[in-house]
Image (tube, rainbow, N blue to C red; front, side, top):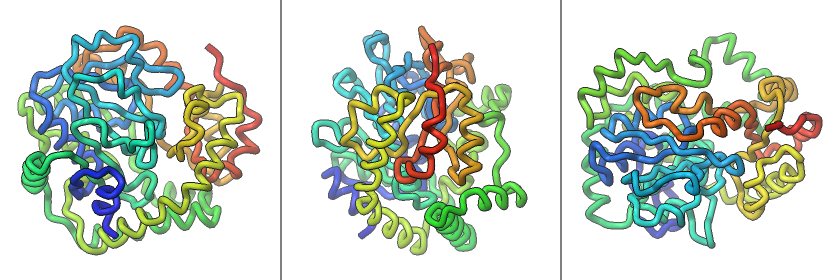
Amino acid sequence: MSPTRALEQRTGRRCLALPSNRLGLYLALRHFCVPGERLLMSPISADEILFLVLAAGLRPVIAPLSRRTGNIDPSRVNLSEVDAVLTTNLYGLPDDLAAFSGLTLIEDVAHAMETTVGGRPLGTFGAAGVFSLSKHAGAGSGGVLAVESAADFTALERARDELLQPGSWRAEALGVASSMARQAALALDLVRPALTLMRALGMEEEREGYRIALRATELDLAMKTVPSLPPFDPWVRADLHSYRARRGPLSHWYQGRKVAKVARLRPRRLVGVRRLAELPSVAAGVLDHLDQPLFRVPLLVEERDEAVAALERRGVATGYLYAPPYDDYAPSFTTPSPSPGDARWWAEHVLPVDPVYAHRSLPVLRELTPARG
């Protein structure tokens, strides 16, 4: 079954196949929002998301962060001052959707393919839900945009086709092979030698901290073109240069195969969530969602970077670390949060752990000191 068909069955919506989640987010923001509108967003998410918002011609309004979940804290926001909201559902923990009633809602469900609220899947509450096939499914790339109406679907399909670039069979085959190798390294407990080899071969893309280099002067020039995505490619394509490239039969076959396996991992993921939730360092919001097969379980620990190194020595790779917060990263391009301290604290202390491999991590995690403050 194709990924779009699987997600159509899950969401009851029309689903558009995409080469990446990030292209889907741009399409949704551009289609459902009006340039110049103020978009409320979390201070912490993947680096490229900020540039997608800017490319759509929107003003990023950085929200206060909830220490319980790492998502937007709507209780400390004047929602009458924003036009739209982009949820993050960080690590699979759901945003407070009820708080955003009456606003244009775009759901980034990259981390939340399996999360439900009141029995209803995330990705079905807003105007659009944008899924990633590289997170829960581990397909290496691919995205799906879910919308309600046929008219929206047709317009978004046309906009997608205008932005797609020619694909490369060689690049596609290499991408599938790389993803298969990563998954094999995880399954066979070979993460540590795989990381060593990648670094020796220069396969890890250089980044400025956890972020893409801002290059403010160049970004100012790109801002004169909005709404338009291609001028923002130098920022958006980081670590996924083919984010707009057409995918062929090989990728579609592999993505379908990987999405079909998501349900099989659900019991193991749930067990891992509950085991990790017993740790004193677990983020409080996890305890409210022990019935959800989270993508990652966020712990909040002292000396996080040392913990990352200790896990790597045991063959456990840690990813999905997002810091610094957006309003510290790009203050002249955002409306800053009224209380950025919580986001800085979270970004410094959060340690996301894959519940599928909780058994490998627990010997290290049990020794960690919960974050203070």
